[in-house]
Length: 229
Image 1 (cartoon, rainbow, N blue to C red):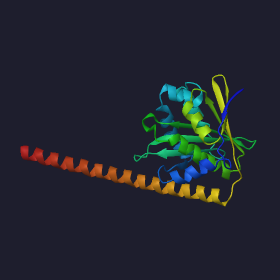
Image 2 (image 1 turned 90 degrees about the horizontal axis):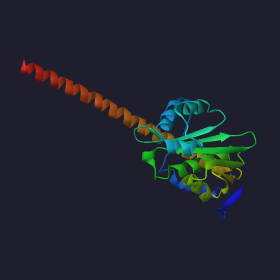
Image 3 (image 1 turned 90 degrees about the vertical axis):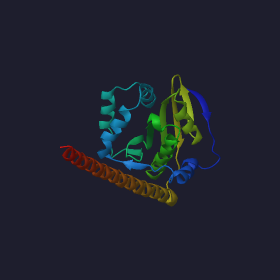
Image 4 (image 1 turned 180 degrees about the horizontal axis):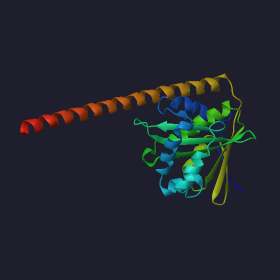
C-alpha cells in the first residue's frame, strides 16, 4: 500500500473528535437508533443517487442489496446513529460495525439536500465517542480513494490513511474510556432524545392542525352548498 498521509493532532488520540463533539451537541443532535428504524434507514439509503450509493458501499448498490444490508445490521452488536430533520425524516446515518478483534468499521451516508452542514463529521465524532466507551481499540474506514470528503474527515480526526489503487483505508487508534468520555456520551444521547421528542410533538401538533383545517374546510364547503341550494 502507498501511504498517503498521517495527520498528527498534537494531543492524545481522538481528542479532536471528543472536543468537537462537545461543541457540536447543541447544533446537531445525533440519536442512537435501533431496529424499529430499519424502514427509515432503508428509505434514507434508497433516496441516495447512484453516485452516493457508490461512494457509501464501494459499488452502485441496487435497491435489493440495500434492503439486504439494512436487514443484516445486528443492532445488538453494532451501533447506528441518525440525524433527523424537523419532519422526523432521517437525513444522515452512521453505522459502527464491531469486530471480534477489538476494532470497528465506520460507514456514513448523508442525504443530498442535507450536504454541506458537517453531518458526516459530526457522525464520525459521535461514533468515535461510542467506540471509546465500548473499549474499541481501532476505528477503521474503508473508502474509495475518490471519496475525498470521507477521507478528509478521517485525516482531520488524526487517522492514518493509506491508499491502494482505487481504495483507501483509514484507521484511528482510540484511547481508553474515562469518566469524561462516559459523561459526554450520556449527555449527548440525553440531549438528542429530548430534541427528538420535541420534533415528534411538533409533528403531531402540525398533523392535528392539518386535520382541524380539513374539517373546517369541509364544514365551509357544506355551508356553501346549502346556501347555493
